[in-house]
Image (cartoon, rainbow, N blue to C red):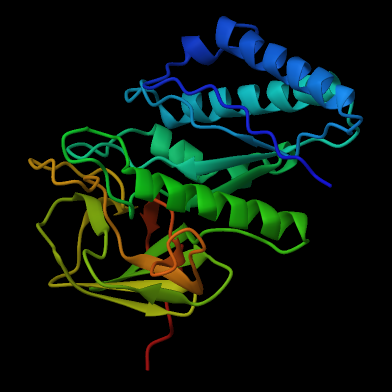
Length: 302
């Protein structure tokens, strides 16, 4: 019979310095794991850590994507190794991350971008990016705190993602890979496990670096691609943003970053049976290629 022990060290607004390897918080986690192992030994049970949940840098909104990525990788690698030694197990635990939503008024933190690519950038570190958090409501008077119900649904998606990987099934939220411009359209290729679906609400796409005031007039999905149509051909050093980089003058209970894109997977929540869970697309930012360099994305003229 299994006994499940959940050990957590919550620290709101955690900074880079507070989560350093060998620091007070890190050492406290190791000490608690050793104590849990001693307790289960008294029960004559084997002690195995199968997952580590990380949510770092909430207090570091100005860090670059590169710095945030390296910080996550350093902490994950050290924690996996040290916790494996502390537990005495032979297999390394998985590391589950849910991509931050940003705040209700500001979604420009590059930490968000780094979190969304951890499984791609560090395939050997056991990262699973379970879900983005932007679809889930926050407490209106709290800048970046999700409601208890939302937190429970995020936790449930993390469990589903872990169980999927442990059973040999892939888990990967849709994420932007490439984008190419052709006349008034931008074609965006996603890495996705199933066809893309655009749900209700704000679609979440915007263009950065446009110097001629072109605006998006239509968004449609086509398998693993999204096609943006503009009122005129956009010009400039273009980047496509999805559910990232937004600002709002309202604290209305939702993150400033919003989006409605997901893949076709869904399941009913066991925690809240009236709620349907989806695998939403991750927040992201990609450079737009020209029609010549991105010709594989652009369909031939008919």
